[in-house]
Structures are given as structure tokens and as C-alpha cells.
Length: 149
Image 1: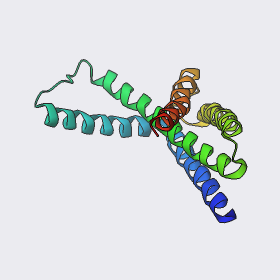
Image 2: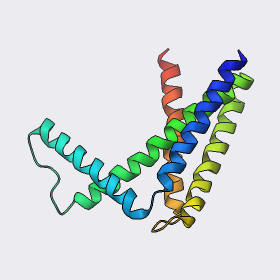
Image 3: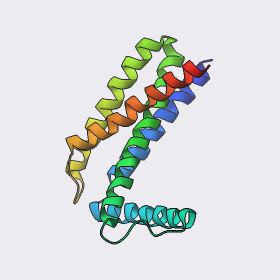
């Protein structure tokens, strides 16, 4: 049973390292990766719909949207991993929720502070809010899933 707790916490720390890695990328590198993903998503949408829905005028907005979806996704996953680790340890859903929300938000804040030290990056309180959408989005999905059972 203890090995399951260690595995869950290892996954939390691995995912935190992944988030740290992405935040440590210089602004130009991060922008290029986001741009590449946006172009891929654009081509996929074009393939599925048969229409070029994203023109050069709104390509920058589309890339911005992709970046913010990445924030939500990163913190959705972090919250899921935190919750499973806390719950495995204490078996108390309410306590696990509070601990998960607290530590996920604190990590989001520390991630923005970390970006002060990265070239062409900076802290953004708005990004912490967007990260919170992923954090609390996990609980909405979890609660909905529980109601379906």
C-alpha cells in the first residue's frame, strides 16, 4: 500500500518538473513551440472542416488561445495528481480537495515568480487565474463523474 503512495507522489513531482521545464524556456523558444502547435491545430481543423477558418488576421489570437489551453491542461493534470496523492494518504475527500486546491494554486504562483528569472518571460497574475480554471475544472469534472455513477 505504501508503494502506491510513493508512486502517486512521484507522479506529482514529475509533473511539477514538466511544468517547471516549460516555464524555464526563454520567451522566443516558448513562443515558437506554441506557434508550431497552433499551426498543427490549424491544419487539423482545416482538414476536419475542409475550410480555412484561421486567417492571418486571427492567427496570433489562435496561438494565444492555444497557450492558455495549455495552462488549463497543465494544472488540470497537476490537480488530478495532487488529489490522488492526498486522497491515497488520508482517505478524506474534503481534506484532499482543500490540500489539492491550496498546493496547486501555490505552485501556480511560484511558477509565475520563477518566470521573473527567465529571459523574455515575466509573471502574470492572469496566468494564475487561468491555471485556477484547470485546478477547479478538475473538481467540476470529478464531481460530474461521481454524479453519473
